[in-house]
Amino acid sequence: MKQDILSLSFDELSRSLEELGEKKFRATQIYQWIWTKRVRNFNEMSNLSQTLRDRLAETYFFQTVKIATPQKSSDGSCKFAFSLNDGNIVEGVLIPAKDRVTACISTQVGCGMQCTFCATASLGFTRNLSVGEITDQYFVMDSYAQQHMGNGISNIVYMGMGEPLMNYVAVTQSVARLIDPKTVGLAPSRITLSTSGIIKNIIKLADNGFPCNLAVSLHAPKDLLRTQLMPINKTNPIAKLSDALAYYHEKTNNRITIEYMLLKGVNDSLQNARDLAEFTKRFPVKINVIEFNPHKAASYQKSDRQALDAFVNFLKGLNLIVNVRYSKGRDIAAACGQLAAKHRKQN
Ligand code: SAH
Image (cartoon, rainbow, N blue to C red; front, side, top):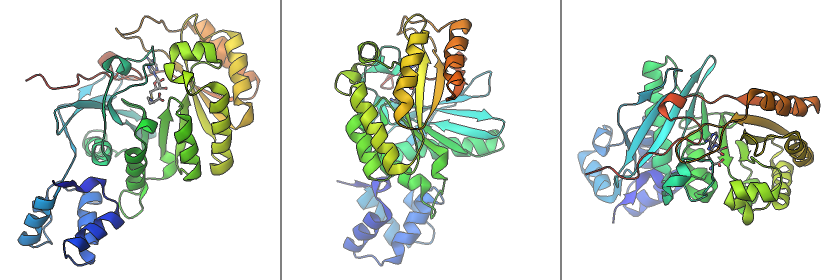
């Protein structure tokens, strides 16, 4: 069985090559081809002998992604459908703004969290993405951004399809590759991982000193409502989530982003805002209030402007940091919660 070379860290690659009887410095060369020059084919590794290239191709493969033509939104954002080696499809989104280009990437084929407002939930869960399938969404969109948007990607958000903390190993390894100063060298502060709140893995991130930003999709500050919206809350209830976030802050000293999407008449009252403020008391936060993006799979409506303003002003009145996120890419179903590529190519 061939091994996926993209899932190997530098040390693992060194060891694996040593087992093949190769010299140590080969690991540096090959790692550079893969992670600095972004080559996905052993034949292009021109400083290696043909014999070694053949040997590598017999031993390893690249678990990577291929793209179809991106779909462009009238607001400038671009949605990419990535096909995987096994025919599954995931989506990524490029979001250009004045001072940055943000890439939104997926971590799973489908999602098993069953959030009632999210289009990805309607797909169900198929499988986790590998390290290469995650990082290569970035590489593909980065070269597109360089060619078509005048700048490469400056920020990455793990906010596409899937629950990143249900794919802990590949997700944290993909982050490690992207921030490795020897390769891509993105600043950790430019990467944000968003989770529906998988407590045991928030604790693991804390224990491992996660260097990037953590965002939590809260959407409701009390258990009864949150469990209705997000069934994962049954086993990951708010009091324990709060403990985990306090611990995360204690360990990493990082501010936590709380995502709160407003659903008309469901979670947008002043009482909800008061409860949300209460929730944020134990650790420093930034609150992103998100407009709901409608789609076929959910019957919710977005809150009207008045309710949104009242909600936001209440929080601001308590000196909390609040940003309102009006989603991009709605016309091409690329906005938050709208990613729902078909699982498999129709043959
Ligand atoms: N599973 C992770 C990553 C997905 S991030 C998480 O839950 O955080 C996508 C963000 O968009 C999450 O905050 C999610 O709750 C939110 N979202 C889902 N459906 C949405 C919709 N229809 N409109 C607006 N935001 C939505």
